[in-house]
Image 1 (cartoon, rainbow, N blue to C red):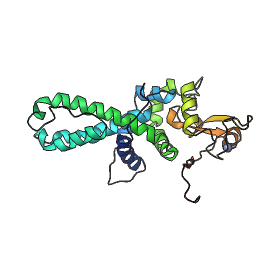
Image 2: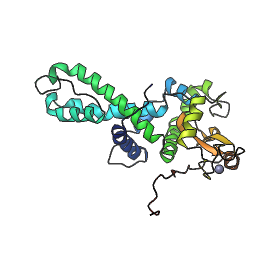
Image 3: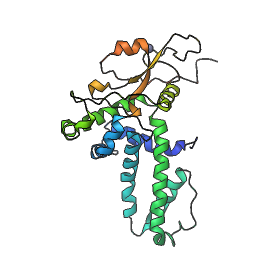
Image 4: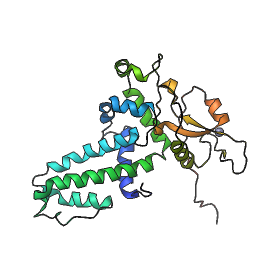
Length: 254
Ligand SMILES: [Zn+2]
C-alpha cells in the first residue's frame, strides 16, 4: 500500500476531468469514454463497492486517450520535452535513454514508462476528486445516463424488476472509513458532528448521493456521510450535495 500520492500530477489531471465532466467544451471533451466503458466489468463495479472505482477506470481512460496524440510526433525526439515534463510532474526519475539520440530505439520502454506515470496520475487525481462531492454528483449523473434501458435490458441480472441496482448486502469497513474521514465526521447536509467524540447519540448513515431508486450506483464515488435526521429527511429525493469543506484557515481572526 502506498500512503502517499503526488498532488501536482493529481491536480493537472483532475482539473481537466472536472472541466470535461462539467461540460466546459472547447477545453477537453473526453466524457464520451464513459459510455464506451459500459460493459460487464463496468456493471460489476457499479453493483458493489470496489477499491478500484469507476472513477479510477475513467481517469485512466481519459488520460491514456489525451496522451495518445503525443506519440504521433515523428520522430519521437520532436516531443521529448513533453515526455520529460510529464514524467517529472508525476515524480518519476528520467532514464538515461530519454535523450534525443536514444529515444527512438526505446519507444516500447517509453510507452511502459508513460503508462506507469498515467497510473500514478490516476491514483493522485482520484484522491483530489473524491473530495469534490459536486463533481462526484455530476459524474454519477453521467453514469446514470450511460446505464440506459438498452444496457439494463441486455444485463438483467444486475438489476431488480424496477430496473434499479440492488442494495449491497454490506458496506465494507474500508469504504465507511474512507467516507467518514473524507467528510471529517460531519453530516454533509447540516454539518453536525457525528463522530461520537463529543455527543455519542448523533448517528451517521452512509448515504447514496444519487439514490439507488433514482438510478444511482454502489460505486464508492456515490457515497457521503449524513446524519440520521438528514438522511431520513432526504428520503428518495435527488439532492445535489454540498461542496462546502471545513476550513483550516481563517483570515478574519487577527
Ligand atoms: Zn444532518
